[in-house]
Image 1 (cartoon, rainbow over the protein chains, first blue to last red):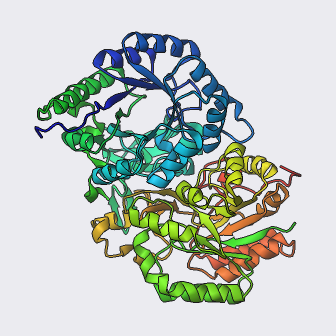
Image 2 (cartoon, rainbow over the protein chains, first blue to last red):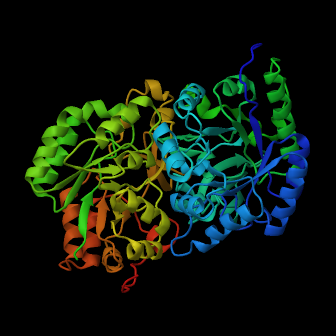
Length: 335
Length: 304
């Protein structure tokens, strides 16, 4: 890998669920920090998380002082009859000086493009734009400048895609919680709990989680459905619906995915070579230690790869889900 | 206006002959107004039934059914896009876009929008209408209240999924193959083993979900038989029945007669249970609850 592989230095896009995490991400070397407002306009609508308008204003000031950008995710689908909350979120993010807003809903993109023609629009992963025809649609109709790709494509497919959408930037997830379904096209959470990522900005919400201990084991439940079962001596994982164990064809199995996290560190040279503009780290709901450690590790490795050096062996074992890692859909065998 | 019935495309991997004969019977005997055909889940399945499409379309058209051609849901490869491009240039039939890319290809002429395209609000609805959408089948997770708001705002016909296992998610990973410890590339078409979808139960053997290749569906069958009149009063113009391995002509008849006021919904429900032995029904979404729940029917409201 000792060749000059990309004239453009990819941006490292890092999560911040709180103002403190934003500062940590900036210090650790984030080029961009993405955040959300403290309501259901964003897909990480968790208690105790996210930014007020005032916090966003100071967060943007801090980031800009240190040469970093702030992107505001407004990436749920506005409720019918009540678009105001979402429109106001776009208006406020733009007027507070956000460097871009990350949107998923066609109606909201249309609103943003008409109301704020100068604003930079990114397409959220929740829009699940998985091919050039979709991506061109969002670029041509609404002026979308960057598309966060759904986690369904392999690295060679991403490279081929980038060649077909000149002038449009792509951003891919490189680390963190992994959706196994095409994002924004999954109602499993609402099927079990009545609350969904698209509508409420939550998946497998903590409000519907229960751990039941009996007969020497612990059962994790979501909405009353058993998601997994552990020996009382094991530590019970969080019951994210698609990472549960179910009975299919008579056998208990992790049918959709094991409790695992995405980690593409070893593939970084390939992903950089695929012509991706920005690398995204998942985890606005994660703590400051996670943000700092992951951002530092990716910053060091991106810079190493760009300098023609091999990927450094930096262990992130302590912070992946269940200690297990996958490269997910980026490798064809995952399918 | 009396609402119409749409038969959604067969979602499962049925043998080509089964697929053809199913539609022949629908043409001859089912009280549906519109029949959607086409592979929406996995492009690897298309070649099998493709040779039968022409005769199925002909038979349906001869029986005065409106034929709609449905697109794939998740398009990733050049081949899948090329197929969508061909589909979008097919004249004479309404095309149902199940992905935004297909809606984009169809822009400028009338088209239908399938339930895996995210239409959650009037802004998106209006935008798709401006591109040419004349019919929109709404996502499963919307409540009757949301459906009513959209129906009030719509110029397009609003359609609601009313019977069968409803699609809940799509993935690039094949779970039928995964369950058989196979990769998608060498899947041996094991999804064909489960013509109603593979049941996915909890570790306590409680019915939960179902898997159909790359698609995850509800384990319960959606059943809005006792809710359709209220939804019709709220402006829903069409109801979608998803093909299952049951007597779909009889299912359609129950919905038709209920909508026409010729069948008591409770009596219809009992008959529907008889047609689907061992099946659990759900209608939670339209009641604003968890999708899997079965709730007492909606109150009749005027206008939504």
